Length: 50
Image (tube, rainbow, N blue to C red):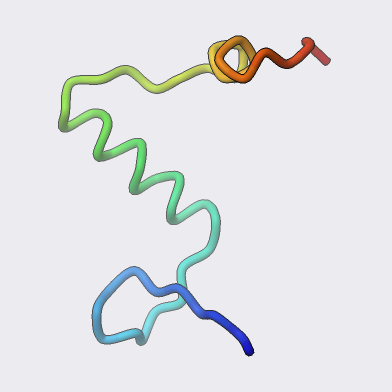
């Protein structure tokens, strides 16, 4: 089974990872939130720095 994700309901434009990241960043900006930095995410997930 193959799952295809699309940006619009018509399903005509397949979405890549960059499209979803851009959409999440835009939603965060509209909500007045700053984008997380890689360092922020590593701290939240308790990961070691590279």
